[in-house]
Image (tube, rainbow, N blue to C red):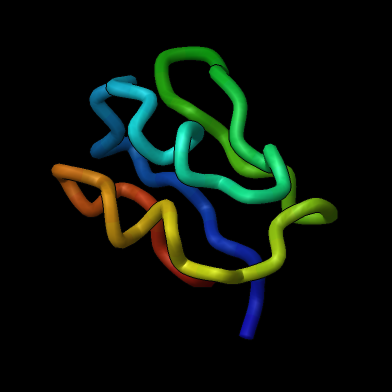
Length: 57
């Protein structure tokens, strides 16, 4: 399994960042971004996203 990434579907609501236990998610340019070196692949971000933007890659 690989780190999660956030697709262009992101609506910048911040729900994913609030649920990340290792603070791997931050605001980016037009969407949130996940630091692949920090991501622990827990899936919390994908579970809370209203548009399904975080995906395992």
